[in-house]
Image 1 (cartoon, helix red, strand yellow):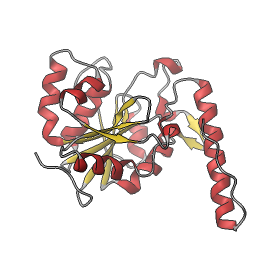
Image 2 (tube, helix red, strand yellow):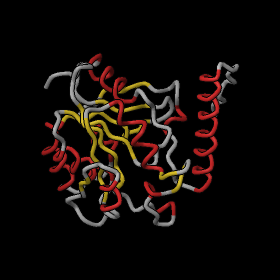
Image 3 (spheres, one colour):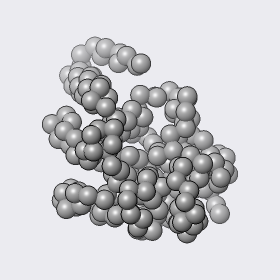
Length: 221
């Protein structure tokens, strides 16, 4: 095992293989948002941070492939959870590390990968997970592909809890307490409305900054 540095090559992996139960069974990556689909917001924010990308999905595979990303499905049936998606991405990655995020996080940090890498390097390990200041965010993580077989065994033994797997391996904690809103997951229509509001606010701030207008501070929750 060796700690990563900022020169490593990374696969960005978007996890879109869930049931979407809390959204009435909808494929959350395909929920309309900001004139497109939610997964497109995630792609746009993650792509500049990684060497290449892939996406884990268990339905609508053709649609996702049309976005230009390789699509990998779970090897375990019946929607076994995000760890099953992570396992598929670790096996498919062309690079020694994978940075993960869920498809329903359109506000994800634009410096997610660098901060995860920094945390792993500083804490002398090769995997790390985000913490928003209140709770662990185990779907936002840096994971080495060397753990692919270990994760396969973990799943084969019936283990599904994502946070517990990271704790088992002593993952470094990456502090994102300065931007907890970046980890907003879209689990309800109210979450969707909040994401739209925040994206609209950021768009206005971006426009003002380029027009030389005074920039109003974005309010955080």
